Image 1 (cartoon, helix red, strand yellow):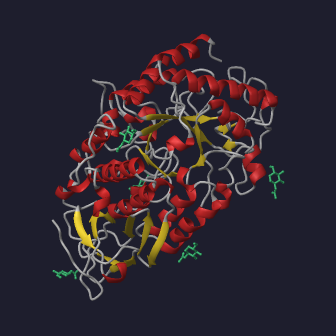
Image 2: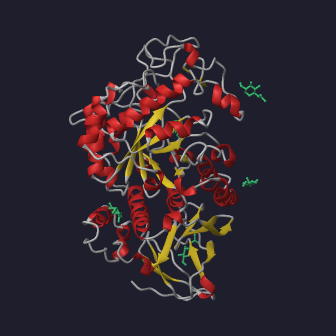
Image 3: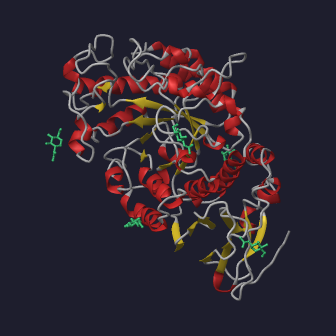
Length: 539
Ligand SMILES: *[C@@H]1O[C@H](CO)[C@@H](O)[C@H](O)[C@H]1NC(C)=O
Ligand SMILES: *[C@@H]1O[C@H](CO)[C@@H](O)[C@H](O)[C@H]1NC(C)=O
Ligand SMILES: *[C@@H]1O[C@H](CO)[C@@H](O)[C@H](O)[C@H]1NC(C)=O
Ligand SMILES: *[C@@H]1O[C@H](CO)[C@@H](O)[C@H](O)[C@H]1NC(C)=O
Ligand SMILES: *[C@@H]1O[C@H](CO)[C@@H](O)[C@H](O)[C@H]1NC(C)=O
């Protein structure tokens, strides 16, 4: 437990944002494994081998020093790996706790990643940039190296505070909630979160942690504890809570953890699973599965706008490991940003990292030289549009509708934004097209924000994507809806009302990436003047 004086001091010195679910709705999150994001000046840039499962040297300070890279891609929040003290015994069968998830005494900080002041400085720097800090917390379990551990150095020292050992049977909710994650080599003893002492100590701990470090939101690891634990815990934290509940495409298994009975938000595993099944190349190419998940999500979750939409994380193989053709990622990413939910991007996705599952998916970012890749630019543009619409319209509250599905793609619409995505991959296909019926009047001028090309809606509201230059995503919006955005040459809003902040974010995103100069996107993708359509080019 922290001393009482420190939280008071930090409240006095810095504004406690304590962001709510409503404030997080408009955010876009960049997920960081602290140890792997950036090195201090002068460190050896070649020394990190993820297969070695040991520390590579990233810290809270090095995250703070490299926030431009995150902010210039339009992200408005970071999620960092756990900050609390880990297991400190001899190296385990799965290496060292460089990832931060192997809890021992959560009441202390993990001094591998810096000091309390370093973490406060990171938080303060984020707030100065109008960004949020989300911290990963592990409440479900601790880590041990035997099935009968000595808990004397842990925050919960008495074995009666843990469930007795049993291996998890996935799909059995009781077992998921009571049994132990991990395996016999590295067991993860499961806290009994019905125990009143556990509930009250965890409550005091999270309240202090959030206040002390001015944390804006929590990402909760392994949130499959009995769900009525969460409302009290998150009320103590006083901030947005996004939980990790593993699941495949089964929405019910995950959606039961979102709502007043449990958490504000869950990570969107069903959408992830559907995106893989729709866009992986080669893969089943199942667009129906994706359309089904998008439609069913609307009735099954209490609030789809708060879900965390991702393509990668520290547990999953990188997208590029599952599917080498980069267009598969660009199309899947377009869905994540342009459908309901909060986009979450795992560091390194923008560098097309291709590691397999744990530990190969925790590559060091520095060998990439933080290059402004095509994927980085695509994220910037997607964030720029989303940030603009979030600020100026009720776009975030409008539900996504599937307008069209075809065997190799689909058209979705959220607010006035139509996204046409495909799984045909990079090779050009002359005969392939996806026609989408829109609610717009014929001849309405539209802008494809990824190429800045102007489209015109055809007769009966039809638009059509053609793939003579390969299967790129298309995002079109009525051109007059971009006024004030700075996107594709549209004027920026005047700065009077917002102190220039909108201008800063928009222009930094567009200066780091000009889609018109990108070789990949200079390709033509156009509305065809087949018999249904009129064709206009404005630029
Ligand atoms: C589910 O798991 C619980 C806890 O381990 C166990 O008692 C129960 O028998 C399991 N149910 C089934 C159907 O296997
Ligand atoms: C596609 O996914 C749906 C689930 O939405 C499933 O019913 C169907 O069998 C799948 N089709 C293929 C070809 O895998
Ligand atoms: C996927 O990851 C595994 C393990 O890191 C690696 O051996 C394999 O080459 C990767 N595949 C691709 C396509 O990158
Ligand atoms: C597609 O059509 C263009 C001209 O319309 C032609 O140059 C190109 O070779 C065709 N590509 C394929 C793969 O058929
Ligand atoms: C949106 O509005 C917030 C609050 O006024 C501001 O901080 C932010 O920079 C704006 N972002 C954009 C992209 O307009």
